[in-house]
Image (tube, rainbow, N blue to C red; front, side):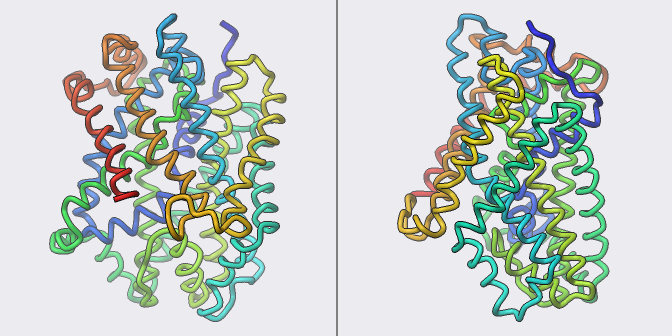
Length: 454
């Protein structure tokens, strides 16, 4: 086996893995559904599902990667030679490509908003702010330009190498992201009238949760806990393959989950106090980020500064995810076809950038194509493919591979997960992970189709 690249430091591994997990869902979905379902009532349910579903599968991905020293596309073959598990390796490259086809353009949106906020382009009357976003979506040229900026920048980081490029840049971006999110939250909670928003966000309100529906709360908490960590497409598997055996994988995974949850939690402390301070009802999705919050910043002292800082934070969250997933793609071609890093970067930069065109054109020139019903876009279809299909199925594959005797097996998984100093994997979970969690993952998969089509 060829000498495997390794990360230079434990912090690099932790920040790179956390950077992959921390994305836009932490900001434009988590705070909204937390408020919708009764604040702390939802937080408790979310944490239960996060520890019971997301964390074990994250540890499994890391274990498969570290034991095999290979990308997901080769890891199953390396650990179970001659078995049919090797055919599931394709989920890594398919899932990573499907995610980047719409995530890179969205990262471009964030960078565009950094620019227009910093240059005063969002300093507009309230009724004109939505036009900036609709204008962006209507212009394929503008979207393509900022998509190219995001794509070329992130591929350029990967081209510099694992330690000198990916690790160094992501450590810097993640450090900056954490400082910015703390600064924004501290500013937000000091606004006049902000504590009403803090109370709405954090004080448990069982009545609000019941009004929204307990089953709906459980379903949304389960989905948020599952999807927040980007598990199932092998992106975490590759970082495990770069890791030494000094620390147990349970220890490392708990830190990453904590960091991901911290950013999501702090995002709520940025958004709710600001919304309540200015009498604005928070919503979810792009409307919150590109319409609601810019109007709040426009009414805030030093609003352009705080608005620019917010979109720098959003860009960092998006770009760290892009860099991490691109590293997974590049590793696939290096492992599977024995390409050099430079060749893998150049080929995928061209192909993947072309693959972003359907998402871009789906908002304008191809807007008549509505694949999931009236009002849907090509981006909605791409998101459905990754979120409702590849992530749950990929996670189910990792779960079965690590826990069933006809896969890698429980004993080998536990030996790898526990290698090194620190917290050990709780062995009493074997029955739950072998027989119950796979059923839960199938329920998530089926529920995704029910919500989408019925």
